[in-house]
Image 1 (tube, rainbow, N blue to C red):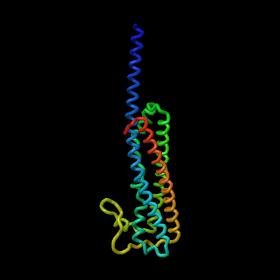
Image 2 (image 1 turned 180 degrees about the vertical axis):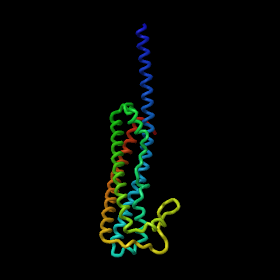
Image 3 (image 1 turned 90 degrees about the horizontal axis):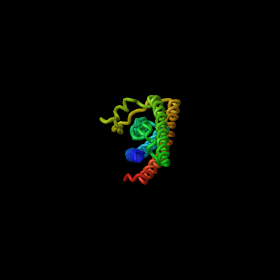
Image 4 (image 1 turned 135 degrees about the horizontal axis):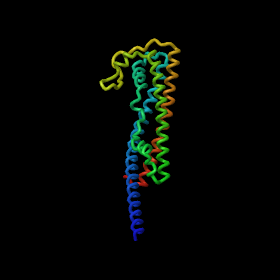
Length: 226
């Protein structure tokens, strides 16, 4: 009888622990689900911003390499000041739950191997895009080092509104600085590098968005979160 009582107590304790772990698993998954859902909204905004960014970069290359770029100085200044800004294009994932899962060892609570693998792959791909963003920051820094040979910083200053957003200037067209061909060639090279990486990151954000949407569908199907 004593053995039976101890055994039943052990079973009850095991079932309680199992229930607690299942509840924790669902709490983590629910939190992760809404983090990823917020990420998808961010990805869509970034895709729009990067498409606009590429159009702006094309405009700079076309106008600055025209026969008389001074004719288009207003447009050039507007696109040039926007080219070095990263607020709207930067990926900042909602990874609080993901970090907690990794750092606390809570990944073991996710018993479905396919779901655990999908979450891990999503995290790895997200980190890869973040590393691309770090490379892009280096290219933008290089771009800023050559832009002063062509553009007057005082004009840039006049273009910023009270909230630090660039706006097109009214009135007379601002003058470009007297640059040499080698300056233009160097500027073209730096801007081309930014444009190429912008395309690559936009491509990978599209893939990341698709991966996120598939993961959300998988989590919702398994855990009935919506």
